[in-house]
Every structure is written in structure tokens, then in C-alpha cells.
Amino acid sequence: MKRIESRLNYGVLFAGALGLALVWTIAVFEMNRSERSAIRESELRTSVQARVFAEYSRSTLKRVNEFLLDNRSNWGNDWQAFASEVKKSQENIADITFQLAVIDQDGLLAFSNLAKPNDRTDLSEREHFKVHKQAVGVDQLFISRPVKGKVSGKWSIQFTRPIYKDGQFAGVIVASISPDMFSDFSQTLSLGANSSVTTVRSTGEILARYPALNDSLGKLTDSTEIANSSTLAGNFTKKSVADGVERIFGFYKLTDYGLSFVVGEATQDALVPYYQTRK
Image (tube, rainbow, N blue to C red; front, top):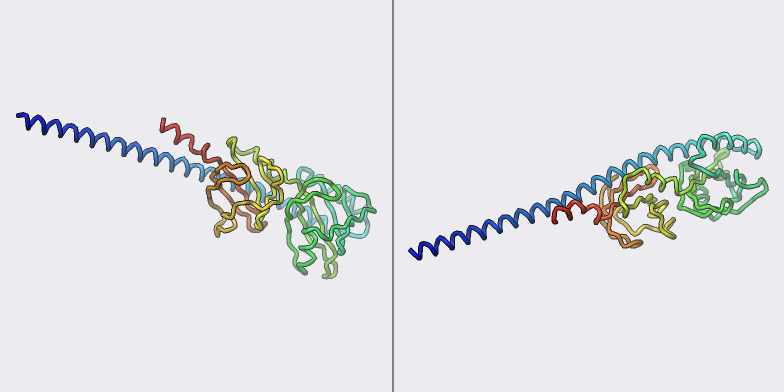
């Protein structure tokens, strides 16, 4: 009789231990699934936000390009007549560009709506001039890294097109755009306190970032995942060298403009639902 009771007790204990182990296994599985789910939701969220950011920027980029093409066709030797045409056309794009300039074939400033007619600032060493002078016969939009303007004194991104006369290089037309054009869009996204929004050139330089970091403009990003990706869109997780925050990033590329748009959500913020299930 005692043996039977002993066996029953062992059986009950074994069943209890087995049940407890099963409960813990299910709990761990559910927590892991909750963590994976939270991360996946963050990846989807940042991917969608990055694409929205890119498509919004695409329409703005088209406007700037059309602005350059329209004014390039009006460029001639009459400085005052051209200034009048620029003033009219800028009324339709005043929310984006603050300066239109023309650099002659030697790299000297030939026109600026912010400078006097006799201002002949030497811009021959600027990236956005050299790239067109060296690419003979190539007529395409170029987007520079951020620079501090010699005339405007403001940080700006240069959108440029070459000028040709009779098939010969005759200079460059330049629209100066504030980096805020990109970073301000972040205000329309539902971002967490530790999120970031960045515009990056295909060559790796940061064109704009929110929140702004000192000396980040024009510097190479510490992420190589975008450049190494063969896809237009994707995700990666990385700890930022700049502020030490690990983020889940979503990116979207506009290859025709050589730009990538990146939205990052802090991993700790993305995992809040997971942490709540553990309590």
C-alpha cells in the first residue's frame, strides 16, 4: 500500500514538474515571439516611413530640376533681364530654394540673386562645378554634399546642371537648397523621442539629419549596410557611433537621384510592447 502511495506521489510530482516545465516553455516561447513581433513591426514601420519620406522628396527634387532647366534656357548676356526672369520663377519655388547662381566656364560667379553684378567669386574648386567641367557632354542633375556658401554664408546643398553653348561647356547653373528641406519632413512622421531621419548620398555623405548632430552634415555615415545592399529598400539594426543609440533602420533608395532616405527607431522604444508582456 505504501509503495502504491509512494508511486502516486512521485507520479503527481512528475506530472506537476512536467506541467510547470510546459508552462515555462510556453511562456518563454510567447515572450520570444513577442520580441520578434515587436522587432518585425518596427522594421515594417520604419520601411514604410522611409518610403513615404523618399516619395515626398522625389516630388520636391523634380520641382528643383525643372526650376534649373527653365532658368538655364533663359540664361544669356543680359544680367538684368535674367535677374527679372529668375525672380518670377522663384515665386513658384520660394519654399524650397533661396539662391540661384550661374558659374561661368572658368569657375567664376557670373550671376547670383544674392550678390551684386560685379561679384566674381571664384568657385572653380567647388565639387558641383568640377563634376560638370570634367564630365564633358554629360547633361544631368548633380546633387552636392552640403557646403557653406561663400556668397550666402548659409549651409546648403547645391543642385546643379551644366550649361552648354554650341556643344561647348559654358558653365553651371546652381540652385542652393537648405538641408532643412529634407530634415523638416520628419515633423510629419510619428517618431519616437529617440528616432532619427537621415538623407544620405550614394557616396555615403550625410545631406540632412533629424535630430541635427554637430558637424554631421557632409560627413560620411558610419553605416555601410545601405551602400552594400543590392535592393531598393531594406532594414538593418545598428548602434550609432554619434549618440550611442541602437536603432532599427528602414531605408529606401531613389537611384535616379543617388539618394537614400533612412528612418531609425530606437530598439528600446520598439521593444516596449515586449517589455510590457514580461511584467
